[in-house]
Amino acid sequence: MTNALPLVGNDPVVGLSNLCQQFPGQVVFTTSLGLEDQALTDLIARHQLPVRLVTLDTGRLFYETYDLIDRTRSMYPDIDFDTFVPDPQSLEAFVNEQGMASIFKTVEARKTCCRIRKIDPLKRALDGAQVWVTGLRSAQSENRSDTAKIERDGMTGVLKYNPLLDWTDGELDTYVNSHSVPTNPLHRKGYPSIGCAPCTRAVLEGEHPRAGRWWWEQSSKECGLHKG
Image (cartoon, rainbow, N blue to C red; front, side):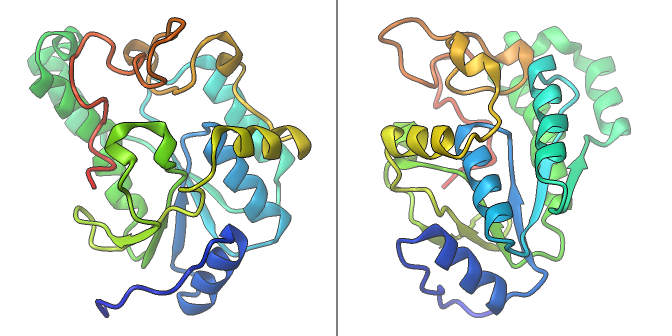
């Protein structure tokens, strides 16, 4: 594994295509079905890029998200789309030892839940991959404002490519609307960022877009997947 970072440029399609050529069969895109991820899914399908799609089913997603997974599979039948779920033994142990309500009581318990439901399945999803593609954008939060377009991920060790990093809210909306990309109806009900149902609420007018995530905490509003 070389330490040199590939050149990807500003065009997401060109960047993805180059990475797929350089790392055939080893490029994985993890989608949480948000607006950015749906736009990326459309780009990948529209340009027939050999990128493997993965979603993490935590077991606590909104009904609307599960419905969107089915609609996305139907609209893009030619792309590989795999689902990873939490290890049942780890999840059973957490629920039996701490209880689900523990996530609202301590940050440590909430992070343990995120690790079991998201981070551990992510590591399995990226097993054997050389490139991890995400829908991160700088505009999403202050924590992501200094993210690089391509970097070596500190947690997994693989190359992490964020092709939509510089897209504005307007550019994202224009792409989604002009290409009839399937989206989560919760976005129209005040949910700009959608995660697990117990951990997500609608945001109020003037609130930060990620204020609805882990709404009871005064934290960085991250689960640990994107530590930077």
